[in-house]
Length: 402
Image 1 (spheres, rainbow, N blue to C red):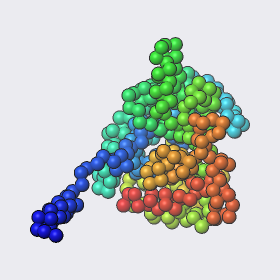
Image 2: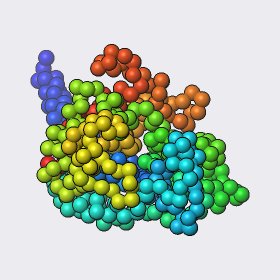
Image 3: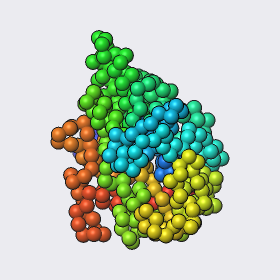
Image 4: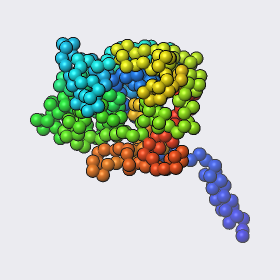
């Protein structure tokens, strides 16, 4: 091989080495682009378990975009109209328990205030550990009062329903999750107002499709009749995630739902030492058994009375034992733990696992279709898709504010 040939190969080799060592051109790969935070609005009737869910949610407020905090009513809590009007529930359980009432166990529309004040105090420390926490002033700016006079009241527009309506009609087409911690009535009023404004106009089909494309309701049971009586018949394509079984492990009967070997994660030694006490002013307001706290307006909140811990409704409890966070799965579903459950709720995540209904393709639900093998009971169990995450969720709760 002559010199010129050798030179040719040497040049090619050097060129290859230079190319191989050079930085690769930047390629836009959608898989490497951080997803936007899920948009969400919370509607809540303010029961004590809602308060505890609210406190935990604030500690994860960097994980999603909270766009509204709306007071609403439910079958368990309503303000009344101030005129002495008697009301009878449309829901069989509360109709049987309470009969006619002028108002029911109403906690008011101020209970978020001290929690947001305490959040403001802990905001600097939360922000040391993670970016993206909203300020307390921002959260105060998105608080609204919705339809609260009676269970299922949706006859009139309110600040809360108008606020939800505006979000559903805005030009931001990312999904917006409407969390239902009480009844669906304020959401129903927002939808009814949209229907009233547009159904008789040429814009109706476009408006309907816009709302359908972006709106997802995450409901914990039905706590009034407005979903079945108004939303489902008039907005049949509206997506709903319906959790009717899996949430029980975070609700009042947790002792019956949680495997006994994991009860310690809900008992006073863990809850008191690792979460409630000496962990800042926000967690100190967390309701627990025997803590001597009492929610104003709800005469049935006796859980904090240390003399009423034995043979309580759901068992015998100790000081600082967990009471309930029955609505927490609605926002736990929005926390990205790497399982892609927002795009695939049937895969499951911290908010449980929901599958698409064969009869109603707009509805994702739990029940018999989400049976998973429960190693604690050696059975197929419809609640295990939520139970499997209890240890991770509770231990994360214990370290999120340290």
